[in-house]
Length: 196
Image (cartoon, rainbow, N blue to C red; front, side):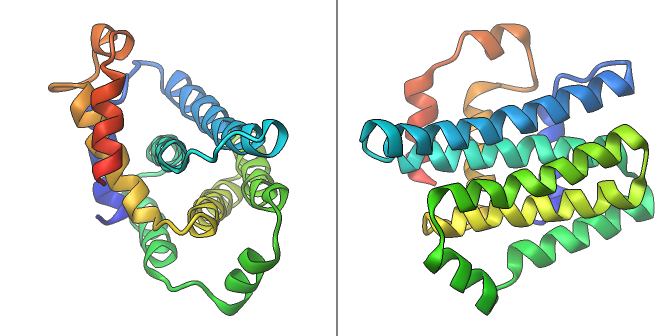
């Protein structure tokens, strides 16, 4: 799935607000929260010797990508959005570079989290300061960071995105509703994630 298609797919289940600033804040907070969920899954493995739950990590990477897509939708439109999506497609479709492969082979868990936290800081700063170039670069770099996390765990970022959309189709019959957001069939969602 191309990133523009992914953005469109996420729009089906997005809780649209009239206030565009509220949409942006929701998307940014969601992105930060989901990166924290990835970190938490790794922390449980490192700190408490829990088995690494790769299905959960795939889900959290997909969820983080979902919110990154919503940030992108909030910040860009028209030719700018098309350009960002083209860059995202290049990141997703590109084979790992030698430096990425070397980084993955030689890194520790903390390194892969840093690989997303630094671009998120840039993205956040650009949003707060209204610097479109910083937002654009932070968006693409954050996506690259999520791709590196996926690669570290032998996953493809596109598979994480597809699994995310499949999970949301399981959760929401048609579109976002408060009822379906709070009353979830987690077993059915997990089953869908395992298939993807």
